[in-house]
Image (cartoon, rainbow, N blue to C red; front, side, top):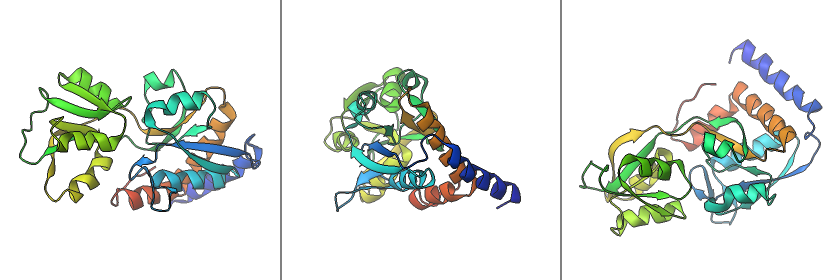
Length: 245
């Protein structure tokens, strides 16, 4: 690590002292709990995954007490706006459409390509077929505009099940989510077609009225980027993926 990064990291950590939220406030972290490796509920019934570790570390650096709330994806933004929790940390890509309703922190994960997965031996041409996607996602919007027929489901598990039971020809989702499913399918499922780049990086959703909380989390994210701890967590949860900040 360069001296510049070390100095920058130290300065960012010191900046928490003047933050309006760096005083032990309790912040409720909303997540889906169904999109590994980003977030999932483990066998003990606890929120787990990349975003659990990132979120806990951000709260530690910001001197915040954070609790975790699991919420279905299709109502995750409305329930943030309704103050049922204070943040969304759920693999949510930063988009202009979402930014009209809520605010976002800086990204804590770079844009990830989306991939199509189908039954092994199926056609690579998905543009004229039926493609499953989770509702209210960037993938659902992309499929709707691609010429294919989109069928939307409430959970990511249902999108994959739709391919397995013949309701859909393929599913489109984040490559990181589908990768382990393909590996565990024992050859039943395969990646088809070409990856597509849609959406921006992943950020934490914040109510537009919570500018102080956004600033506090941005400082924490910048601190994790500067000292390399965010890159280490990305490598841990995403098959050694290398990211430089």
